[in-house]
Length: 90
Image: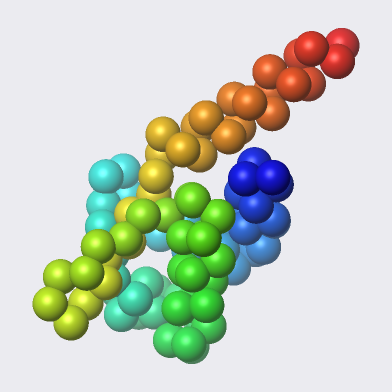
């Protein structure tokens, strides 16, 4: 079920672009992502919530800002689980 949420979250072109905004290890807030996105602040916030709920992103509040970063270990595990499943089927 959790792996399905990852694929659903990653299936959207806007969310893929948001993920590509992050450099390795980088933490970004909504404003920083909006600056480089054609989407509105509310749309970016919505996509960040979907990514966070799926486990793709983690977040931390610092003052008034919330910073997001990719949970690369979780994403790698989800993708690895799918590959393991596919390999077992062959």
